[in-house]
Image (cartoon, rainbow, N blue to C red):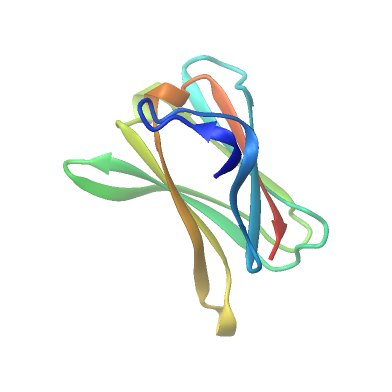
Length: 132
């Protein structure tokens, strides 16, 4: 991560910056207050130059395993998608997997980020895919 901050002690993500900035993927994050204190909101955006699908898979920690919970994607003209996690749906951590279209229609994992669920409660975290 660059610029903003992921506090490794608390698992809280703050500010703005990039979770990945490489030739094959550039993903910006911006943190704002959510519309309620009892949830975490995730937003996935794709800039106009992005034409292939992008996805955010959110996993939760259950009994010592990562379990797929929710997924959002952008594709074609759909440039933004969002999901909410209410406090009642949270476990101790979220694993965020960022995927993009790959060769022959097979997805390719771009990066993974693990954050504390409860430390990020009340936040709206927007991820903008800027380069593919």
